[in-house]
Length: 318
Image 1: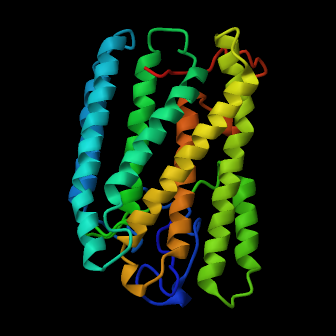
Image 2 (image 1 turned 30 degrees about the horizontal axis):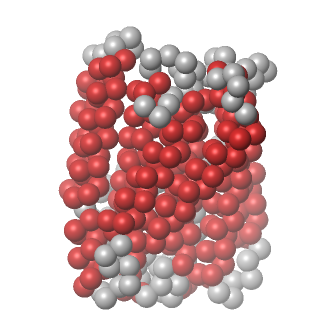
Image 3 (image 1 turned 180 degrees about the vertical axis):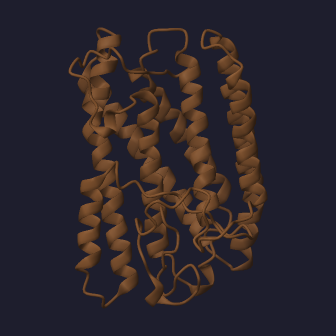
């Protein structure tokens, strides 16, 4: 996803409303590319997040899939590491907000806490659609789910907060959500051009809403898989629970976006609307990664003819 999007009254580079652009413009850009297109130095926060995952990946390479207890410990340790890294950056964000007299000062810790609570709630319901839902590996899948969402929190921070280095860009997802991006492109192309920032925000808002709708569309399949694995469970109720929890995570991420964007590079321009909308697109795409964990290929239209849950993957509340 792209980051060089203007806020109300100014872009991230402070060039004013005329610099406002929208999500999807950086198709093919690497997750570690800066918006300038050059090499980017990692912030202390990003370096810490990358180290958490690097250590976990190294250990994971030497673990047998049958060692479910060891994998569970690994995933919990990874999450603890990511939590520490993300908590450590709150002070930097709060200093930026306080220095500018921003109304979001003091909201970093509550936003992080709300995001984590929402992550647990989502993982508790969706991982039961995983292929391992009826096995002893379920708790490990749930721990992986929670850790992945914590890593996604870190990515939103690195992409949108001012940490003293050029922010990296979260890749767009045009191949996964082609109809959403087609509608987005049409809205951008046909915008009147009288209020670039508001128009950019509206286009990104529409894109994030469309992506979330794509996720809602696969919830009946996820619910069916859970019901097949756990006879006696009501698929309609499972679907309703999944939708509620996914909605709760979206709300929590919206709050995170508001905090980090207000502590972002474009804050001195005094406008945030379009950048927050961009961040919401990043957040929506991240939710698709959670669906990928429990049901690989589902969002890509690779749903098997047999919807009993066989051949898919799942996790649990742990």
